[in-house]
Length: 349
Image (cartoon, rainbow, N blue to C red; front, side, top):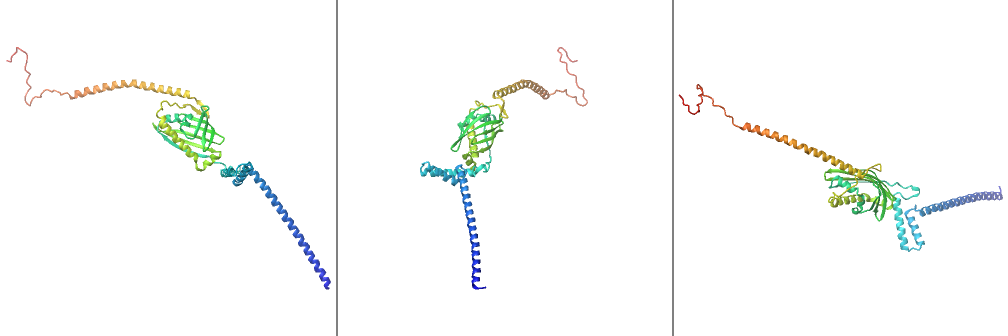
């Protein structure tokens, strides 16, 4: 092959190789461009979703704080106030997320029920302790966090109490109530509810144990925050101590004037009214007094019978103590002499 032919053949191969390399590079550039475009679109979509979550309060604490601060600045507030508002928003989002309140679609953790069990002893009879407990309207006068109790009916009451710096209200319905034994209730409220039972146990004639078992369902931010260090249990313990203090300093002095609710409730319905219960107790007391009177009347007859027995025993003892006079016995070989006559005017021959 001549040199000219070799040059032509070599130039054709180089051109073919160059064309193949150019096509592959073009394909690579197109693929990289598509990938970059997809990444950009994906990031834009993710950013849109995150902005939507932030706007709806479901973003991360830092993002919510930044968005809150930016909005405050846009509204014309000072940088200091904007930063403070942003910080509070971030803290709130962090706490809410920790308790299962964050995330979209309710995918957070479920709040657990707080179980509270407390007991306290008070130095009064069971009836006094129970009657004082049924006076719900008196609770705000000696309990620190109970603000008001509105007794709507015998089985329903509206409560208002302070939780940290907020005020909470709820409606309590008594499910079962038996005098001097126990009270069971359920409640509902916008920011949480408390269900439970309080029972009364006689330890001695003037000593009563009060047992309180509660199921606390926190729903508000402050309630969930307080659940971290079991603030509700300590609050219940302190309120019980306030109850004991009130009973031992006030009720015990005026217990004769205390009149609690003596009715009975079953299945959230009053089955025995207070008036009927008082009447039944009075009738029972009268019956006991009549029985006691009959027993007192029978006691004198028994006393008389015992006195007669005592007199007979005394007579028998006196007879046994009297000396007995027996005739003197004659000596051996002698006869007893006849007794001398003591008739006047007669002489012995």
